[in-house]
Image (cartoon, rainbow, N blue to C red; front, side, top):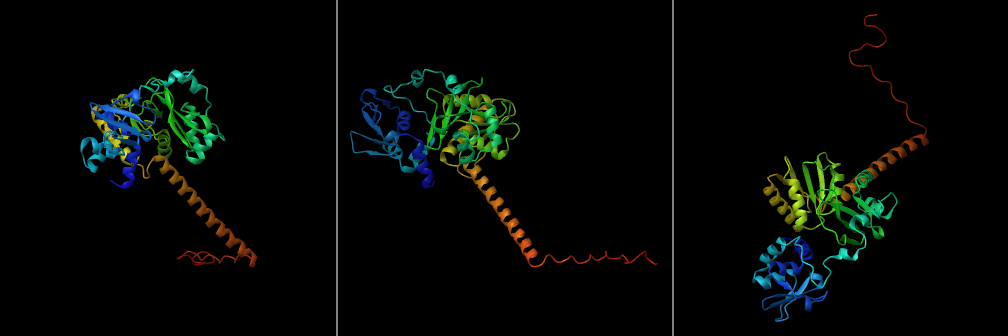
Length: 347
């Protein structure tokens, strides 16, 4: 595994996930937002740096998520990497001293909050972010807006709807130039772009990636483009299982081309096996589908510039010819071989 892949795993998995999986429990009375204390019998581990670091107050042990696995399991580094990779997408519990129901703080329901926001429109900050920065084509954006999948979030951010099987809003992915999150009080299920009855299910990790793949494929017939929102919650797994259990379905793991994406792809393979449907891995040529889309747009623009340069060069030659006295008259065309000149044969 390359260094960048290890760094991606370090960012993707919290030390809290390792401890929960190892049957540690949060000591809420002795925890703070910056230092969360976990206990297992007589063992204590305190998680710091928003889940990226830890230390054992009963010894000198401390480190990152890989070091935590080595410390708990007495394992080597490579075994630790394997275990951390298996925890990608693990949903950690909210400590008791934090609000377990942020929705209680919201006066409006999810549906009301969604309806209170405008659709993106040409020249709006969200539209510019999606079209200019993310390179999503106008036609695709209009399709997604027509299906009420996109709304304008605060400060030019995007809201991309997650819905359940009944089509009800359960939350939304929030993404902007400097922000990434999910709706307060919402639940990750699936972002869905395409016909509900589709038999090809293309699963990505983000709504922008789902739309990017749809743009690359030209909204392929019979395809439902999906996003898990970067997590693997029980509701997401149940929703995917319900879709995959239908007849003649193919589950396409279009997750990112990195260790986290590969881990999600393996989970999708297992889900497909359980549902009894076809499965395939569709890796983006770049790290994710939006990067692939931006690269395609860049190449297309460069090709257009090249064609424009050649046309301009030809125009310059034509103008130069006029300055030098005009173009030479074309030579008379030769008669085709085997044909006499000047009249009928034999006359």
